[in-house]
Amino acid sequence: MANQTAPTKSGQYEPSPEVVAKLAKVLDVSEIEILKAIGYAPKRNLIESVDDEFAALFYESADWSEENRNEALEMAKIIFKRFKEKERAQKETRK
Image (cartoon, rainbow, N blue to C red; front, top):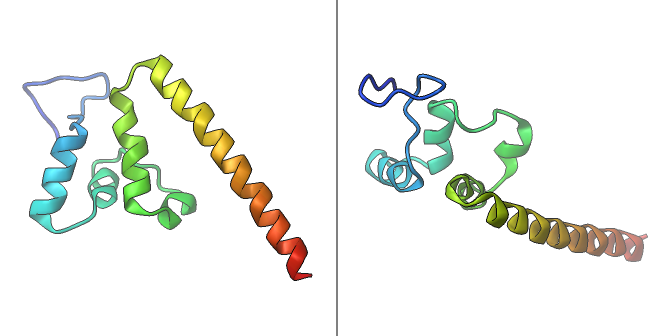
């Protein structure tokens, strides 16, 4: 989506999370599909397996202050560590 009226570093229009959500609804596609189409979302297998809503949460954090993003990242690390330990324990009990 080139935008001649709103130049950016990349030369690409960078839609807000609200615009992405509206486009997805109107086009009847997921928000992650919109992000991929404009080259914003990473094209790795990991993102393919992530629920669209989960990926959208990370996209929305782009508008947050650095302090808030760092705090959210630390919280996510704690949660992921807890689930990793839980998964490991569950695998051990299945053996």
